[in-house]
Image (cartoon, rainbow, N blue to C red; front, side, top):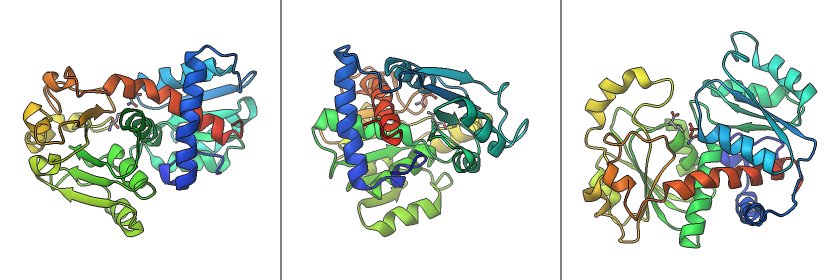
Length: 305
Ligand code: CP
Ligand code: NVA
């Protein structure tokens, strides 16, 4: 197994499935308050160039619950690529810590961080992808449906970092993945083609949310304007107005369909308050599972399973 976790498909299918089983085990240990401290006397450096609630709290709490100490480094501590190059940050943090988790703008920076660090590096989101999120999402799907294979997962909205991680997961795990997005907000074409080329999953990009939702097991959305693109929101509202997840759209799906969102959500834009508060909505177990899945990821790459 690679020492880093930067992209979902850096792992084989067996490694992905094994980590889902491990997440179940570690979640049970934490729920039972077992004395399980694989990271005793270890420290995790958390580098944040962008805001975060879930990622910061889930990593910090998760690492602490596993016996370690996590420290927060914000944009004024490490201004990656400006105050200091990623390759210097990598070697400095390697001298003090046992692992690095970083949330950055430029994907190349996380690659450089991982290349120069002597310790494992976990990607906590870049402009390109969000692999911990998608692992937590599929773990939540597994808990909910009791299976991970051959579900119809429909993403409605911007072809962004979340979609790239779904596409990379679909290149390992068989699924029917549909992304309904405006023609001008497509996911990265190389990532799309690479995922399709593996032939593992049925992958579609379409521009009709109602059509996409038909027979869906999961309807998933994300904000119309990601971090770094917030200034485009007014312009984006015009392009995305048909891409709102409401009860009418949910009614097109399989009756047992669930609603998922990586959060934070902008109620009234990409999703209605009614859907967020409906019985189909599993966003809070999904958010909690960030911690359990990331714990399993950290334990796996640190070789402590
Ligand atoms: N989903 C997610 O990564 O949330 P935060 O941006 O709050 O960390
Ligand atoms: N696409 C969103 C995800 C937030 C968790 C963003 O990058 O802002």
